Image (cartoon, rainbow, N blue to C red; front, top):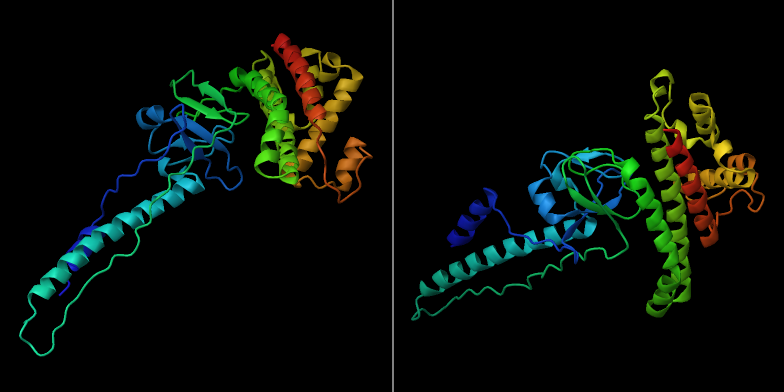
Length: 336
């Protein structure tokens, strides 16, 4: 009775290719997300380069350099859209088979019989997949100097998604500038959010942007300082432990031992003290969800908060951090 349905099911079991068109942003970039549970960074790759340059067997995260096959980088919205599109395709194919079997069954019925049977198939509503909207936020664009792959990221990006090339020396300045531009746009962002949502949502979003800006600048500088250090002619004579440049005191010491000049020689006392505070805040934001612990108070001497309270990061603090980092970066470049 269900010959066409069974035939269609067997066809589907052998595997089929379902044409799916993912939405791109206005510049032709495709949204991607790092599949690493510890990262989850969102970034974009120009679709032409994703298709023509990026290899299926290996893609790299621009922030953490996690690598995975190309089909593992869909955003949650894209994954949902792909699943819905596949379900819609299967439902459509089986629906046509059910209709065909129904017509065949009805033609075989004896119209003179005392009991007549007919079969009909009413197809349910096929879900119309809504394409995942490409994230329209301020991004920083890059082009790899090794393989020419073009990609973009919100804030810092250190590695090429296609070949994994480390580009921190070329991209650090742009990363800081991106945070500065975001700070300049905060007033307009706040007004737009208040108009579309409410004041509480707007302020919560501004808080998140400021926190993210602080984390991005400090993290970018740590990578930058490390890359600069390895350019020194005597760098190979030093043993550099993992994540040494996340520690401001150790970073200052190793640069002074290698060049005769440390961070405290480039910055004045107030600038260095501020930078030390921002480094400690980055740790609390990145690892403690912003909740102050006793270690933070002891190391930073920041008495504005009690244990258990949440850090608050002012726009002016992020702007000051950007200025101090710019000054320190210029000083380190002069040493290499």
